Length: 201
Image 1 (tube, rainbow, N blue to C red):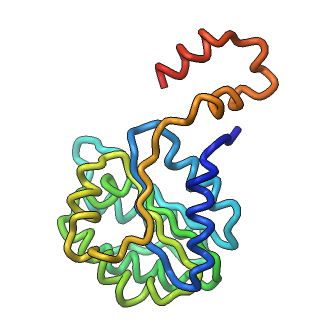
Image 2: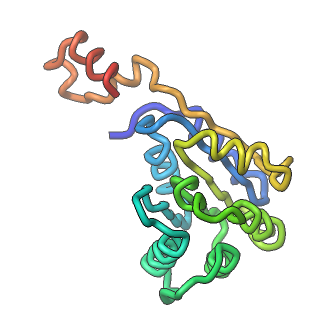
Image 3: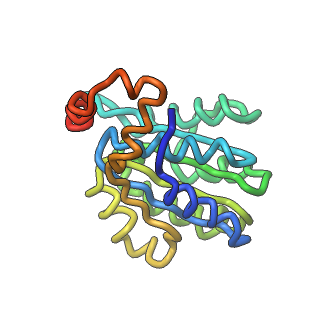
């Protein structure tokens, strides 16, 4: 069940009224609901593409991340899976499959996705400037839990200065929204039990 986050949904929806492309950064601690928020909003869009970075593990390489991106792109579009050589190539191919207005592209766990390539942010910036920003009613969401990576590589990166249309720092749900989360079961759960679960999450 999805509850709350009305303000964030409204802010995202308003971007489609601007008749241009918008770059969004969504950050916050792990398990706060960032991915769920963007996925919920994505259901309202004409076209929604979601890409997730591989979680860290020993021996993980940038090639692994590129291969996973290619697999996810092929699974969501008619584009064949390719052996990608760079993020510039990956994002350029992504741009070529965006055909609709009211399209949302979601890059989730971006610090995992780009963490193995020091040029990741720079290549994304080039594609944004030369291709992606030319779309109308288009939103690109960059999301992650490693706030320091996002701050260093996106928010404080000179290449992205003035390009981010919306920055969302997701906080915990308000208590009345947490209560609504239980739905019909709310009467069978005591307030103390709800607070204990809320404290853990």
